[in-house]
Length: 170
Image (cartoon, rainbow, N blue to C red; front, top):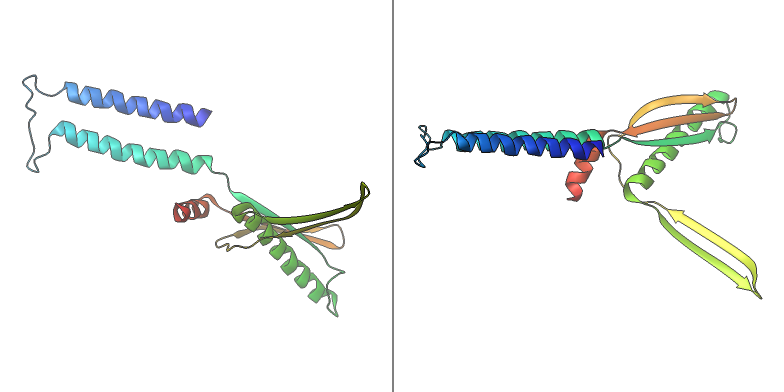
């Protein structure tokens, strides 16, 4: 709600400035023109519109939170022969899991479910989920060991990248 109030305030200030600029014109309806053929009032209005476009983009930029994805993987479940390889593989798997998490948030999740009921008794309930999409620009926030056998990887898709995705969608 704060952002809407800020936007309304900015627009009100712009209208007030335009009214002041137009009021400064000559009373006979003729405003002086510069060498480019643009009156000072029209030039000021163009400057205000340009500033407002930049301000609206800044307000939108500040209201879009980053998208954060978290992934986990266990070390002991990795198919390697020594512990160092298992650790590296666990970090890689946790990173892919975090990417999947971000992809779900950006592109959505395809979900299919099937339930079998016989004589009003649940016999089988199957749910499948899949995600498909491309993620670029995700940066690694942290890689932490959790407990003795698990790694956690946190990735972030920052505001700039989200804005680029939104522009591409539009």
